[in-house]
Length: 154
Image 1 (cartoon, rainbow, N blue to C red):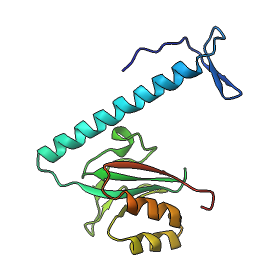
Image 2 (image 1 turned 30 degrees about the horizontal axis):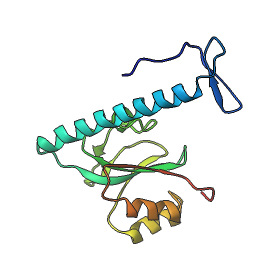
Image 3 (image 1 turned 180 degrees about the vertical axis):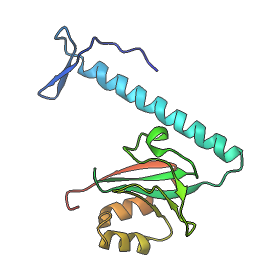
């Protein structure tokens, strides 16, 4: 992890970030957060690579968080802790339910198979996501990770 180029505590005002001395560190803070995000994604992809190298099945699925109103295409595996590996809030571990479906078993968080755009439209009709989110998920179904922000219509 990169060294933090600023002194805590940090404050925000008018879209700018200031360190404990009152110095404007907005640019340094943004760069630090970008490096941190890149390092986390590299680690997540390394874990996925090891799992695949070990021959464990992976699936690309749509993670939907109806509480925080976002979704993400994720390549995942049984036992994958999406909260830890991909920093998806309160997602938990991927499990197999009694019907053989991959699930999270969490309130307001679900995994949906990326089998067809029509199936994603059906999930949109049920209120799990919007049509635009379904279309973005389908367009990026081959990704190992693709974050989809909710649009205003959800």
